[in-house]
Length: 329
Image 1 (spheres, one colour):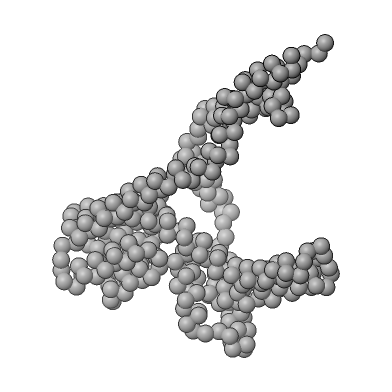
Image 2 (cartoon, rainbow, N blue to C red):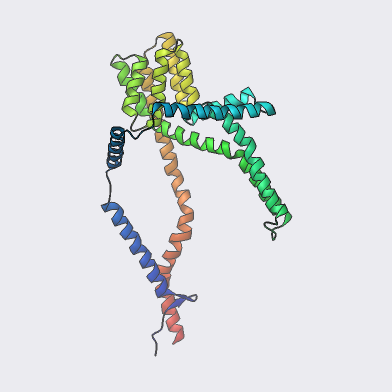
């Protein structure tokens, strides 16, 4: 007589328990491997620096003439695209300035790429729209779909290809803004220390850029550029306004306003920056508390889908097996 295998609603309980045990064992092994193979975060950077040093010694780098030639080639491509758009009379100065500003906020310094973005916004719908229209209505793609679904996919491709450059730029701006927001309170604390130590504003920005360049490269890049502009621009207000234009962040606009007022009225810089730093830290703590408060609502769906069924099986499984065995006797 073969041994009886307990089942619940036609499901083999032993097989399910074996699979869950295998998954749990695999997760434990992965956790042990991740805990025992923690790598030094600086090792990869040191290795890259050593490789770069060896390349410099061997001369395996692009020459200055080659870099200049690449820059000139990019300028020629941008000029050709600009000439094409001008001939079609679709290039507007306001549109170009807006695209240049968004490129600066994304960390792209080349203003010539603004024309390329506008050109891509015009060409991509033509290319992908032609392909999807010919494929759906000419080659018979998605024949089993209804007319509304086929029209919906064509419209989606057209709109998506038109919005693709803007979505790409928006994604880069969002990531860069988030990285800058994380390092801004620390940067303001360092600015306060530099101001109290007697450094000038441009020297303080340069010092902060050097100190925070490794931890927050985006913020260090912006502060370094602001320090350079403060050194050679005749109007220091323009340097601060350029910083506000390059970063799409209200906190940076507040810092810029404070710096401009300090330059204009001669108010103490350290005290004003200290107040701003405290406010930004409080905002960062409030955002963290907001995320923590949303966590129970976010965990509700995984709890219902993955944890509760397993809990029911563990609690009710033995009772169901006992009842099944009692009824079979």
